[in-house]
Length: 217
Image (cartoon, rainbow, N blue to C red):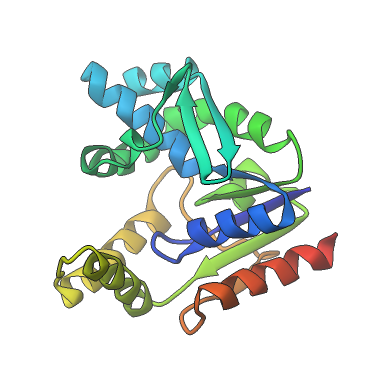
């Protein structure tokens, strides 16, 4: 079974999908991590152009290993779980993920990893491009203000403050880019179930997604 979960950045889908996959004994495929791997290698090799990044994607040897603490990401024998979450990679991944040739090269990798077992696949174009025949499509969303509050909470937990209004504006601008980019824009599929988590806490979000999945089992 393939569960395709799409939605904008900051809607909380990654943490919820990770928890729900663990509870239901599903595999989790974080497609964003795959693009981050390409961005990491591109940075290390100082590759900036689309053809060069597509070549990196073509030869990318990526796999995931689950353990009690979560999911580890490997490129070959090298664990890159933390490296792909650095500020530098985060800054670069939006550029890399918008490259049509890169997205084309990674389609087969995503489909191969997703079809290994019952899998929750989360990203931006899963239901529309990667797995259009998924048994269940969910579009995860939340208002920019709700997403900014969650980000603010994360930073406060680290003892850092952020400009709330500036974060709201950043989120709106990113949404605009993702919905209107030329290659594989973020799309709410007609057959997707919309799950608005603006007023839901983490446990309520998990229960909502689990209920949808169990209804298809």
